[in-house]
Length: 372
Image (tube, rainbow, N blue to C red; front, side):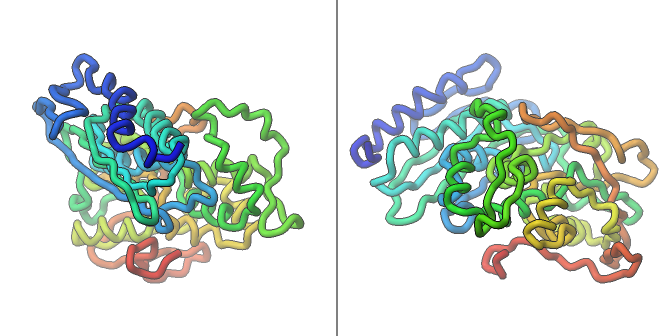
C-alpha cells in the first residue's frame, strides 16, 4: 500500500503506538509525549544540549545501495554523535520526514524499524516531529536533546595539549567508494543486510565475494563488511572517562583534518599531526589497495566515521592505548585511543611518512564545495 492510501493520520497513529511507551518510562522526565502540539519534559539539574541534522536523498544517501532500515539507523546515530562529541548523554529525539506519496508503506515501516533499533542502543525516547509529503526526493531530519554535567567544546585546546583519536578513520569513506563500484546485484545484497542488528545470519555470508565494476574484480565480503557498515550504519562513539581531562573535542563527521582545523579555528591554535600515527584498519588498507585509493588520503579527509577527536594536557598520561568500547552490540573490538600529534601556537603542519613537513590543509566534506 502507498503512503497516500494510508494518509497522515494513520501514519502518525502507527508512529505513536510504536514509540510512545518509550516516552513513558519511569524516570524519563517526559510529561507530554507524542500527540500534542508540543512535547513537555522536566528539566533536570544538568546542562541541556540540542543538536539537529538533516539527510537529503542524493546528497547524504543513495537508495541504490541504502535500505530504509539503514537510513533510519544512520539518521539517529549522526545526531547522537554530536551529543557525545560535547560530553553529553542523549535523552530525547524529534523526527521529521518528507516522502513522496507513492512511497510504499513497507519503506516507511522499515525506516522506523531502523530508527527504533538505534534508539534502543542509545536509550532515546521519541517525543514528536513532523511527517510531510515530498514532490521529489526524500528528506529526513532529527533533533536530539541531551544532558551533561561538563560541556566540552571545540574552543578549549591549548598549545602543548596532545591530540587524541578514538578508533580508526577513513573506513566510512572507503566503504562509500566500494558501494559506488559495486555491481547492481551486489548492491541488492547490501540493501538486505543489516550487519547483525536485525538478526542477519552471518554464516550465510561466509566466503562471499563482491563484484566491483565487473565480474573480473572482486573483494571479499569479510573485508568490505566493516567498511560498508561504517558508512551505512555507523554507531556513534561514546565518550569515555577521558572526557574528564579533555580540553576540546569534536566528532569526525566531515574528515579528520577538516574537523581538527575546526578545533584549531575555535581555540585559536595550531596543530602538528604525524601521518604515521594515524591508525588504519587493516581491512581498509586491503580494500584501498584493491580499488586503487590512497588509504592515508581516506583517513585524513574521508568523513562520516563518527570517531572522537579530542585534546588533553600533556601532563595527563595513560590515555594512549586505552581501549574504549562503543555502544554497538556488534562491536567485539573496542576502539583504541591513539595520540596523533600535539597542539601548537600557530603553525598547522603534517609530518609525512618520510619525515617531510607540509601544511595541514582543511580537507574533507563541505556542502556547497567540491563534492567527494
